[in-house]
Image 1 (cartoon, rainbow, N blue to C red):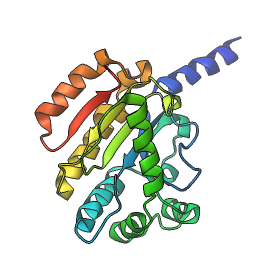
Image 2: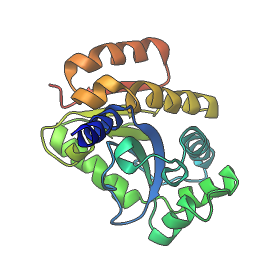
Image 3: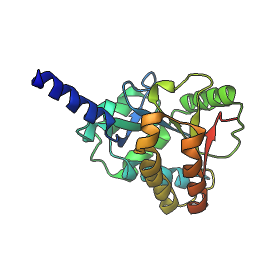
Amino acid sequence: MSGPATVAAVAVVIHEAAPVPTRVFAGPGQFPPSRFRGYGFLAFPALASEFDYDRHMKLCQAYVNSLPATSSVRQQREDQFVTVWPVKDKKLASSLNGKFLRLETSAKCSKAIDDYDDGQAREVLSNVRAAQNVTLDGRGPYLFGWIPADEYGQKGKLILMLDLSRVTTYEQALVQLQSWQQKIATNPELLRDGLSIENMRRTIRDWSDQHGQAFLMLIGAG
C-alpha cells in the first residue's frame, strides 16, 4: 500500500513544480508543439529588411541568450513553458535546435532571421485579431502566451501579450525576456490557475511601472 501511495505523492509534487522556461525553433506543422505546460510565440508582423535587420538581430540574440533550448534541459515537456521562434524549414529548425546548438549566437540568429516564417506569424496574428477583436498595428514583435498550453487556438480564451514594438536595444530586449521568464513562465499562480483578470492585474501594473519600453496586457479580458 505504501509503495503506490508514495509514487502518487511524488507525481503530484512534480506536476505542481514551476516549469522551466525554454525556447524552440519550429518549422511548418511543428506549432504548436505538443505536451508543454505553456506556450509563447514570438510574432514579427514583417520580415527583417536592411533598415531593421540589426534590431531583429538584437531581439533574436536576447531570445537565444535568455532562454535555454528545450533539448538542453533535463525536464520533460510537461515541465516546460516553451517560447517559439517560427522558421520556414523543418530541417533548419532541427539544426538550430540540435546540430547548431553550439553555433555562435549571431550566426544562429542570422539563419533564424533570414528564414523566419512570416506566414505562420501572420496566421497567429490574424487568429488573435479575429478571436480577441484587438488591433495590432505596431512594428512588433509581439510575444503571445497561452496558459495552460491547450488553450492555444481556442476562441474566447484569455491571451497574454507582450508588445515589444518600442524595444530598440539588446539590453532592453534581454530585460524584457528575462522578466517574461520570471514573472510569467515560472509564475506558480498563473500555471496553477491559468490566466485571469484577477491574477494578472498586479503583474501588469508592476510591469508598467518597471518597464517603459514594452507593454504587457491581457487581451480578451473585455
